[in-house]
Amino acid sequence: MSDVLTETAAAAAGQNTPLPVLELRNLSVSYADKHRTHRRVVHDVSLQISPGEVLALVGESGSGKSTTAQAVIGLLAGNGRVDGGSILLNGTDIAGWSQKRLESIRGAKIALIPQDPTSSLNPVLTVGAQVEEVLRLHTKLPKTERRRRVLELLERVGIPEPERRAGQYAHELSGGMKQRVLIAAAIALEPQLIIADEATSALDVTVQRRILDLIDELRAETGTAVLFVTHDLGVAADRADQLVVLKDGRVQEQGPTTQVLANPASSYTRQLLADAPSISPAVARPAPTPGREVTVAVSNLVQEFETGRNQPSFRAVDDVSFQVYRGSTHAIVGESGSGKTTTARALAGFQRPTSGSITISGHELSGLDAKGLRQFRKHVQLVYQNPFTSLDPRQSIERIIEEPLLNFDPVPRPEREWIVRELLDRVHLPANLLPKHPRELSGGQRQRVAIARALVLNPEVLILDEAVSALDVTVQSQILALLEELQAQLDLTYIFITHDLAVVRQIADTVSVMSAGRQVEAGTVTDVFDHPQHAYTRELIEAIPGNRKARP
Image 1 (spheres, helix red, strand yellow):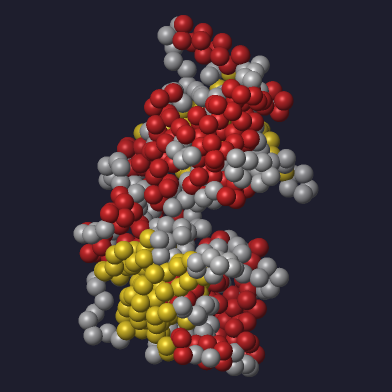
Image 2 (cartoon, helix red, strand yellow):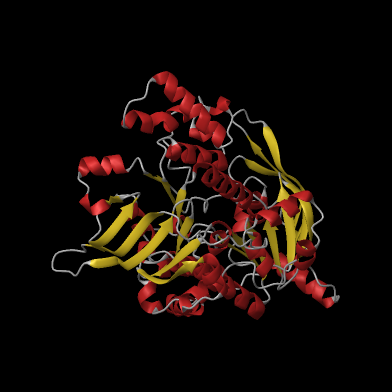
């Protein structure tokens, strides 16, 4: 049945009329609730993508961008439906096609690269078998030829030792490797359209750049069109020819990327641009004032872990030293496996260092017994990455915030209630949220609750472990502004753990750059960004999205 698409494209070519690979005309989509009442979530969306072109569909969570992409490939949730409009693939409207008919073009004409490679790959099949499945379903190649083609594809997407990797399972591969496997499966049949749905949002910046470079190369070689779904305007600015900005399921504006970035017509797009740390102009923070009290001092920190009997231990952190002045922010940056989170856990007192020293607010951690360590945690609190999992779903917001007060020196109930309400006001949340549960709050509200909980014991130091990386760009900007406000009001010292150098440039005073457990560079943010000394630091900075195209 996919031959219809080929014939339509060929007929247009014969008439010298170039057809868009994909055209949406007034596409509308709705979801049914538990009462089977349909609510419209995508409203009259129209766009076109030509061969070899990249169109970025950008917007925050709930904007309708992923729903639009899912409608194109026929993978809406069971309660979703296309209410109206057309989905033209090479001029043929596929909006009304059955699932069986759509299966004939998935992989062959349209391919999807999903966001989460871990959940998208089958854990009980080798990665080679999963790439081969596409060829088995859509071609008549014999098994030996399919196997050869799988190895070619794995090599093409930059996976080393393809024969060995083909026999491995998903859990044996890194996140970047898993995403490359998904790309290999997506390009196996050289589709005319690739839908990349937040395909790099969970990856480190350097891995993200390599994946995006790979998609660019494939597009240039085969003329494949790309629908790039993302909330990251920096990535869109770098990679897209056209931008379509969505909010609440409606197109706010669309046009050539350079034009939209230079002269955004809608206030929503202007806000997205202002909130994107990789695009908005960086404001240099002054260096910490000389002579201020050193709140955090780390000296020659080493953290090793046992790997098994008769096996050498693994050194996750190797001779790291830095100081943080009271009221300032020190960022620890690096890719996955660099040792930054292990360092954070040592600072929080969750693990005793193998050697070296950590002194926070005058407390040297290695000299503390269990009771002393418990009291120490009143001075240092941790805010985790994901507000969707860090809050107890069974507890009310009031209980979540007040719980640390019950775990330490008991505070009378009237005083607890006053403290909780005062903190809720500090993080700019209304008091009517107190009886609610985390599931009833947005991601940004949940992270504000997590920050309020961390502040309830009046700590001097907050360790923020990827505390904004799970948030949309606008919510991220609001949380960063809140953190700066709280720091100014309470003279807090922050240790900010992140892989996002654009955020570091915005919020931090000093920075340590980590690679393979070692601190390869350290200094003020201005010095490190303007005059990076180490090749790894330069690579991280060059990989920040938003640098490839001229910006307004």
